[in-house]
Image: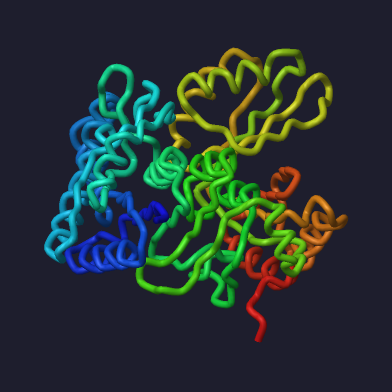
Length: 410
């Protein structure tokens, strides 16, 4: 009898009717001869509502108390789903993250999983129960509830699948897989049958909101395949797996697998910095101390012993970043800070990038023809990212998607 871990996102359990639909899918999976562990997120936009409530109380909430607050959303989901499954005549038990044996470090709001103790889940499975586990939460060494960061239910599902030695891990949402780009923006975007761990990591880090990147990292580390699927369709989705398996499948070799975009970007430039050792270290260590995550970084060549540094952060951290940079720059004579919040990051991602010359050149030529100005460029082995004006984002994605041959075949 195979063990399957099924994870359902917030949109899948947003109301009573959807809860009942999920319950029927879970029962069908069990009736097919599987042991089933289910991970659920908070219903609908519950987490956002809880965050809004906290903001009305204080702009500086205690991290420990935020974890206590945010963990309540998943508790609602596990209890209601358990009721729905019980009402359909199946044995079921719901467990919080810590009851399920998920232990994490003491980094509140963004805890990292240290260990999974599967004994309690295995005990309930041996009694023919469907086991439902609250996603996004764990227990730390202080016996406090802690949470695993935005999208942490994906990580819950993956670490449970690894810890329980599950035969498969299925992630359900309101989309039916991973597409070559967001199908809401590009109507002829194509669903991918397979995608490698590295490609998925790059796409997740570049704006694709399909899976939490940390969950993909863990899956890659332990060789766990993930099947992303739609709750509302029985069609096959996308398998996230090793590059080796993809090549064995002899899939059509594409230069790139996807075009991602992220308009949640702000670009900062510090002008006329002294060209002396340690300046960059001072700037970015100061930002790190106040938990500002920096994405792309470019430093210009020195002219007259002065240089410029540009970098991007998420747009919601603009004000926090500006305050910190004003403190830093006040120590340097003539240095200034400029901020542009009207930018977007466009990325081409694919394992073909590393084995095909000219991908970057083709991307830049497309931008040139369409008069799209590039403000910053960053590359990795399988990704090329550019910062452009926000108003050029849709045009850039459309043209790249078409020119790299990613559209559905007519």
